[in-house]
Image (cartoon, rainbow over all chains, first blue to last red):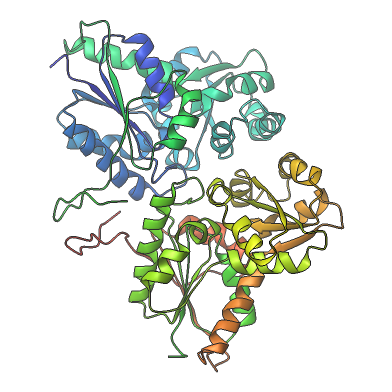
Length: 276
Length: 276
């Protein structure tokens, strides 16, 4: 059991920031990553659609006989985590709770900012998680939809990114947040820009790091940590791999291989794989 | 036959700029619009994936008994138009050739710029169409991937859009273009910004307007113009309509209704509609 892989999925390259942390912290683990690049992004899509895509991704990873699934996407964690946890018999870890826990610990004034996609912000998943931890906490949220295309274009530290960050963060700074949760797996690439725009007193919470810690703890509790030291990884994508490999390298910090293309969804009626 | 609707499709709201022009020019025509919002955008996806999505959209519109299909998306026109024209017995009109024709007519110095998605630019569809019309023409292309999210966020005239436009257009202006094709159906919203960044001598070509003219000409040639004066329209989307209706209003300039959600693709093996 402990040698089985951890399955990780996201709509595209964003979840590679989580994969990077998992690899750093859990060098013995085998990792299987699925990027749903034929249907990326999830952040502007409806709860129903994101939830159905997440179920299809999880079903694919189950077919890879994984021991745990990490939902390495804030939007999918917001809309589909409860459903996946009820549906599956293996543990499913999302990125919301680990990030919220860390923010609750770090925030002295108990005023926390959360940035994410339209989907994540409108779901209220972070305010719910934060209030469950610290009932008196104040949460100020802002959707930052341009950060994803900026990160994917390699413009994360471009003057345009600075200008966009100033505008997005202004209402949060007015509310005097002392901690900011990066509620989208693309945003760690924007850290230098966010750091430049924020006062030094505001702490940044990177869900990727916290999620990797949570995974380690959960596997350890279950006695399922892989004792090896050289885990393997493989990548699946739902569109052709070219752009994923090219853009993803900047997110993972390592070459992305081997990559295989798969077709989702599997038709629920006849169980045929649909060519996309 | 003439009373049958014209079918129009795009990945999302962009094609509504084409629908707007069709409505303006052809007031008697009934119009059926499909926005593939569960899988938007097409501009960063592979030729194979975009082509398969376009085929599914066209098959859906055929089910609506349309007399003509307008591919109101530059990426889908670039990758799938030939295939659709071969596959279908009704006329299929794309947005590339109408825009290229107008640019070839307008350009005095025969140096034309083309801006579009990564997909459209890498397909070389515009340079091919332009060179077929004017063999000695020079074409300079630039992908402008941030324009789509800027338009969808309502930031088309924001200082950020100006800064982005300056950066994207600089290499085209260095090549001394005298005409610029807006090779993406989202870009008409950025006209004021582009106009402010470009010298007044550079002519802008809006494919939406040209495509509507082409549709009128083709229907007239076929004797299929609807003689009525009050065409109806209806809208289909593949995700829930909320965001489409909200963002699309700015693209269409009119309220968007009635809207119905449909599921694509239809499974080719068992012909079940897949819930998304």
